[in-house]
Image (cartoon, rainbow, N blue to C red):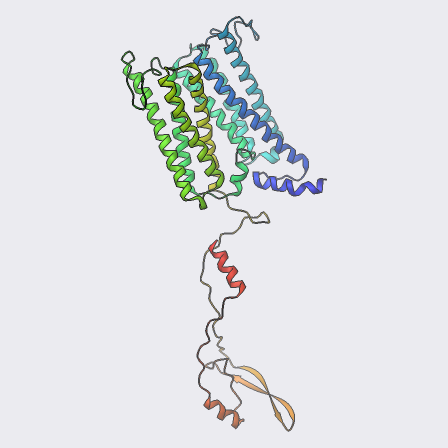
Length: 428
């Protein structure tokens, strides 16, 4: 059984970029890292969406300014809805912390397979740092009475945590990471995807600020243009307009990215093209949800859906950027698993007649008295080897030689199968 599983294990190692796998236990370690990264990603997304519900429902101070306990209890009496929502959010944060710690523990324990540059161990340790930073900022937010700057900082650190967990999942071979390592993309697509991720994080940051700044969420009452609310300060209206502007730029940019990849489909990695379509679909869905939210006067359900879609936009844009970056650095592998060398096209030169700088002696056969005799024949440096010289003592042969006209150069021979294969390799 172990012998039968080695080819599959080697293929997993080559696809995920993890070396040193030589037995089933090592493959199991990689699979455990992969499963834990997906579990951490699901919990992180759920935690972010639930955090938006906490803010929208006004439950951010459900436990007062008590942290990490709630009024002195780890499990307080569930007597108020806002307290239940806030405590559930904290419990979910604890589950996320344990999941990320488990992921980092498994990655460090199997660092022979998960370590090194591009391995999931480093990003898993980065996720640990991000989860503790998010927990500390969560406590600061509670102590500061949910100040806008503290809430936005907490929101950005939570997005960083989501990105680190997604990076770990991709490096483990999931979320298209295995395909990106064996497909070739272009640096142009990588730069465009990176720009999309930058705009996405700015849109997410401005969205959090719009939600927390007093009056900013109701600063505009119409779509697509902003019908200013006269009861709101101008600065709050400007914040929402900036958020809208970045969102529209992101939509237009992703439309351009998808269009460019459609035209260059032959040179772009299919997994990157698919990720670009998913990111574009998420931002188009967000436009519909945001329009319905504003025209419906901010119902809580649509506000929560708007926040959840924003998380999906950041996740999809980050995954797009990271997959494009991997594909742009990937060299396709041959059937044997080694990197195919890059061949530069060079003209194939046909063989030319060989001219000898020194006399070369050949042999010819003539019959004298019924006996076959070999006589040396000398080629001079100026003679064409296709016309042999005869010995001077043979008068009849010399007379024949005078009547022989110089031969015209032979046409180049037709390309052989080796030449055809070489030309085909040069075109790759």
